[in-house]
Image 1 (tube, rainbow, N blue to C red):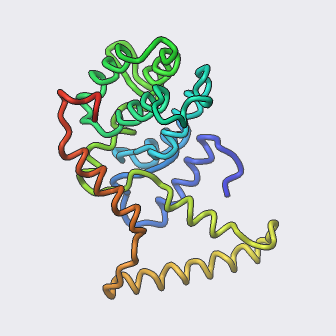
Image 2 (spheres, rainbow, N blue to C red):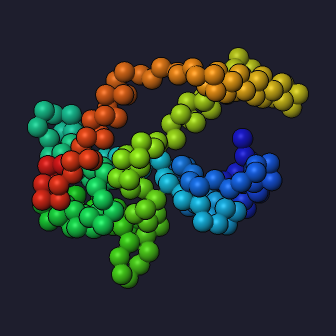
Image 3 (tube, helix red, strand yellow):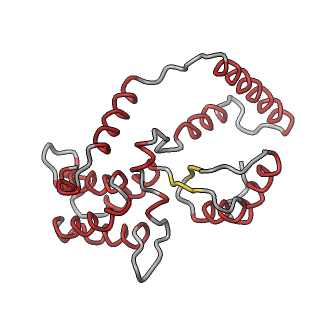
Length: 229
């Protein structure tokens, strides 16, 4: 609902939120937008900012499809492109102190066609002694978040946004928008009452299984078997 994606706009938005809440958040999960990261850091000093895993893998995908032959071969049963994509995604699930080590291993085992992609990952997501990454490892690494059963993405927020913005009328007047937000707030407060009374909302079975599988993989991580992780 913001008019643009400028850092000053985000800062004003976050300052407004800060004026309405009693305490600063400990952590925030957002999209990979540097302006958002900078605005959050300035308005909420000390907050832990995490980038959404789903959006990170989207960024990876958009870069990888530029590799010649990627899309034509990705969905084949045995595909080096698919293996490479998932190996790179797995960087998110290893301990932070092992990320650079495994990144170097990937550069050594993947063929030269993947080097432009790996250089992109190194430039934007993996800092070293000479430079700071645009999005440092702690902002996207999921190892501790998985073990602490914390969200990996902000998809629930986006799902809410999609539902909230779904309406037969696309251009609401300010009065119609306020009424829609009032009804949404009423619905939210009703959900809070239900949760406090002990109601547990059912989760998707497939998602529960996926979360358990990821948790077990992370829990049993072995640095010596990192390439089959």
